[in-house]
Every structure is written in C-alpha cells, then in structure tokens.
Image (cartoon, rainbow, N blue to C red; front, side, top):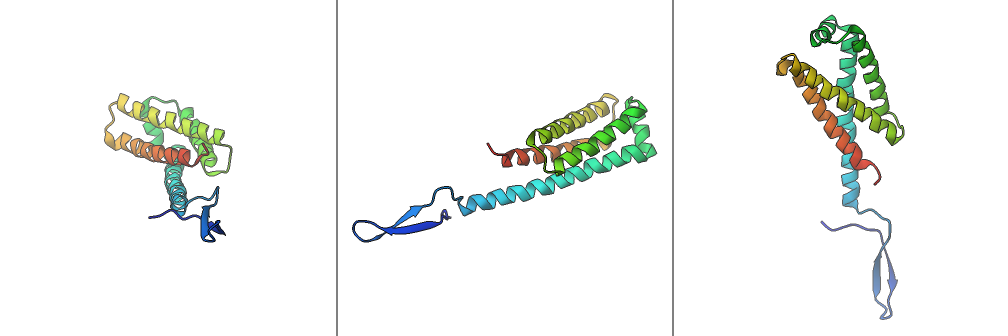
Length: 153
C-alpha cells in the first residue's frame, strides 16, 4: 500500500506538473496505526482498571478476601490501605493527568502485582490463588506498553 500525502502541484520549467509532498502530514497508514493503538490502549486499560477496581471493592467488603489477607500474613489495616491506593491509582490512569503521575500509578501497580505473586507463592498457594494476579499483571504490561507507545518521544 502506498503512502497517502496531501499534495500540491506546480509547473516545472518544461510546463509539466510537479507533485510535492507537504511537510508535517502523517501518512494515512500511520494515522490508522496510531488510532488502533489508542483504541487498544483504552480497551486494555479499562479491563485492567475494572479488575483492579473489583479487587479493591472485594478487599473492602468481602469477608473471604479479608481472610485471605490474614492467610497471607498481612495485618487488617493493610487491606484497607491497599484498596484505597488501588482506587486512587485507577483514577490517575483514567484521568487526563501529567505523564509523571501516570508513571507513578503504573509503578505502584507493578509493585502491588509482583508483591501479590510473591505473597501467594511464599505461603504455598496454587495457581487458583495467584492466577488472577498473574492475569492482571499481563493486562498491566499491555496497558503500560501501549501507553508508552503513545507518549511523545
């Protein structure tokens, strides 16, 4: 497929038309790729934020999740603190905030997800316990990679 540019024509010395490429115009194929990247970013990020939001809710409201935190050796206040931090991070990822804040939110989620995997594996939990953290981590990786791809260089 050829590149599509806005062109202008003028006459050269022989009287024939000359086509010139306009500067600063993005080829249509690149614009489509950028649009697809933006859509993929928002779909994956929405799924990630829904998953994180659900876990924050579960940590605050469900007694079986509170029991799981006790099983992992965490004090009760940590579950509440972590839930509110997750909700704050979700707001930052979804809001139009400076890139530095998004970077910190992504870093916080990375630490949380890696820590969850370590905690579950340390106490000998099986994949039924740590699989959700691994799946959410995969969404995190894709969301972060797509976000970085959109950031100006």
